[in-house]
Length: 325
Image (cartoon, rainbow, N blue to C red; front, side, top):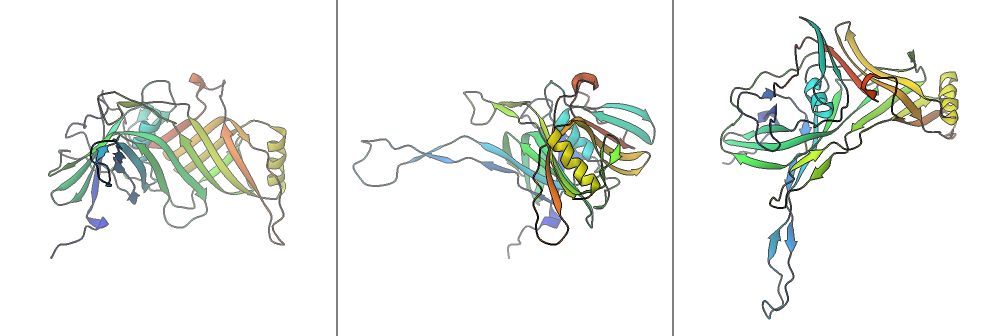
């Protein structure tokens, strides 16, 4: 009897590509755990309604359309694998430190972003090789939650190939270290905790621009677009919440820090040097506790080196995220 494919039987390996859309060489892959993925290769069939081919009322023959490839990858939010996705999102970091105490600083740059190959073992003798994957965005949440945190990675890609055997060679073990509990995380304004904020959803997007080649059904690559960091905040209507309300209505810029800290040598921090809250109303929703809803966006920061409007600082025990290209 044929057996169904089960999630527990899947495995994935991830590697940077030296050339866009050309599968990464075997032996350069790292195992990556995940919860769910929506990566797909879509190639619609186009209608071609030619008149005069046949004198019959019948459907027209179809012709191949263009390949649309990409999707969302949901994975554990930990202080190891996050470096792989930050590298794809922002470029290679500047790394300093010594053994067991490394600091990796990621900043958005103006150069090219890496593409990746992701190979998924779908079943024995069946591997799905996704090529030309560029990291379009990362998103997550900050709230009091149970379990472990999850990270959402949005990919845009080139194409998929079905393989009968793995092309990844020897795969390095996953970098999953120090997973972040759901209730960990802090958010600060100008170095002071936002005591009224009870939850936040954050999102960084690259707004990648595809470019085409006339002789290919797949994209030829992706150029970095105008990036954006945004967040939505829910805050109690306390003294601190009122201060945020007044701050938003005054259009006052401030430094935003979102951080997850396990120890002095194990942490991740996002810093936006010039953040702005969108003015918000203050609706009354019954006799219970009242809340504010704020939208936050990042603006250029002239005080930051390289004019980086967003800085991710990762501290862990991994020596390097460099590709060697």
